[in-house]
Image 1 (cartoon, one colour):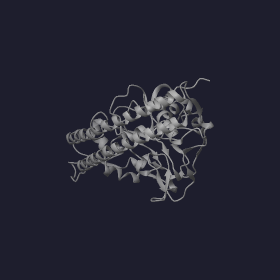
Image 2: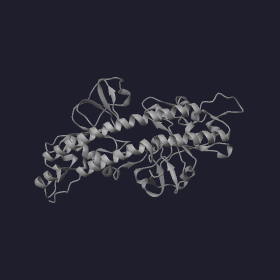
Image 3: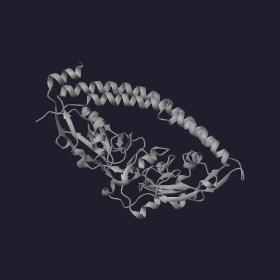
Image 4: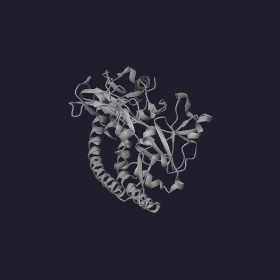
Length: 400
């Protein structure tokens, strides 16, 4: 029997009390925006991303859990120790009860919050949460000595895991840099017509919009599916298993997503994230639609275009440098489809497109494939860590 099992058996054999967050903590948002960030500032600024940025002023000085209010729900958690600033759409959970260790709560949130919140999420343009949802989250309250022992084990496990992951991430990053180098070399053309044609995106196909005017009641119902924003942003090839149900009206069916379509993000707080592309390589099994923060391009494949080739072109450094010509904004950037359609891409002969596409697909699979190589090993380590973490943080509830 482990040390944790011995403590639980001795101190709470009949189970532990569960309490909602509203009885244990203060919950609120910050009042800063990304435009307030200062590069090299002395204080961490928690926004809605895996890594905090910097700022020259702070709003809070405490130990709290930070989670995003939209984007990365259930996948992004921070714990603060000291002074920091907070984005206006990120939440701070500051525990005031003496019955809970904040580090224990942090691990419990990391383990159980996603499954809880996703069933209650507002699914409109992006998945988002509101304060009342957080307040209803139930946390177990084993004796503090049990909490401290679990924290000690998970801290040690986390440090070891972080060290191993850092080594794998460094090697993976080096391979990705190598892939990007060869991709950009293969997609740099100095030839003149007719060897290489330069065409506008308007000449390659037809643009269409994502869903608009949807409300919460339209989601998680109906036979149609929609692709969330983060699916497009994160995946060069769209993950068709990461979709959600949506109710579609007769007038909206013309914008159905099809095999071979190239999807783009329409809007972002970061200019570099605008017009990030994702490709539909598989055949959708159901009516499939885009969210309103994205748009699609349906290439004319009868006009000598190879889909794998195009998928790499749109993520190449040369094409990404053109995005500022098509996107504008201050605190949020939006892509003008009129200007975007005027951007140009190189079109070599079809056999050369196919050769480039096959080469880069193979390289991309070696670097980024989740079923082989470094990504698979990294994923296996994370799953192993999550298994033991979740096992330590599973408690029988005390019956009243």
